[in-house]
Length: 212
Length: 292
Image: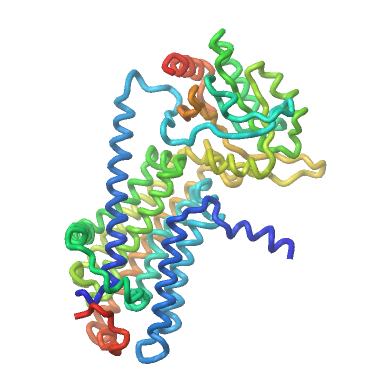
């Protein structure tokens, strides 16, 4: 039996890992249950509290100023990845968010929508500025370089993909359609999806503003 | 030259994991040390055995620590391929190579002499015997597949890096444990050894739920896993097409591994004990120091 040192050693290592795994799985489950049993009715939007990393970035905004996540502390932040030449998804989503902010009324001043370009090649800061101004004063355009964009996509586990350019050099970009919502402390709380209405977004934002 | 340099990034980890890197590095180091210790004599390791071992380890490493990992997080069928490697193909190759003898020979003498205190060893042994129980091991094996493919759990595993790592680790660890229990010769399994007949039953039974789950995913006419639409797919593809390929990977090749397993067990039955007997007669120089 002791002759099987290698065998038992590797198996024990694996066994320990398995046990840790099981313990973690149990913890995760109980945490999920606790979250469900938390105060009040559940949010309409997808709850991602504790699942997604806190807000953290250092990028150039549409006015060519360097901004970081710290600049948006004490505000609710809606983080969305898109590009200005997006034919359908981005304008629809941003319009929904603009409507939600309008529904919020004066409270909208405590909310910022950060529109991060996944197409920095075409989205210069000037282009971004013209684009976000269409939607309202709460909208901020952010232009990462490719390396910064890669880091952000790892941090928020999003994907984007450049389609082949046509004969005029135009191309589309496939990208995520989720809006990550962070509370005043920069913690990820909710995920707005393309099928959520402006009213749903507004009422959940109002609850978040009231609770934090 | 230039394309080579730009393509190298596909071989680099998307998200570097120290635990995976260290685990693979230690395993390969032990194995190479073992190969050198066993040398070219009667105890030498055949080329194909070593090849099978390295292939299994390389496959597992590749799906976890190259660009495949990024693709797995953003395309359902590639995620299913990743788990096919982690839970089935990789562990089967590693176990088939019979690496226990080589890894044991690769353990430095100082470490081999170390005695693990009983208060640590015995609970681990009890736990190990429990999860390698012929009734529990197959339930764990199939249960993990179902657990991580439950849509709500799948969502959280894909959006949370820590759960994602936990998911992949649990699949690899369970794959190694299960296939070790199924495919390793009885003589090297120690206290958890189970009979070949029992193994045939287990291998046949675990295929059934995998068939059912795979068929369910493949034939489902709406998208079951919305995370890929939410966080973006690696490239543009019809979500249902992605789901069908993923379902087929869960259905056919995964369950096929049971057939491979059954063939291996039949081989053991035909060759037991003759085929495994020479391995017990190692030259004294390579016998572990604490044997006996």
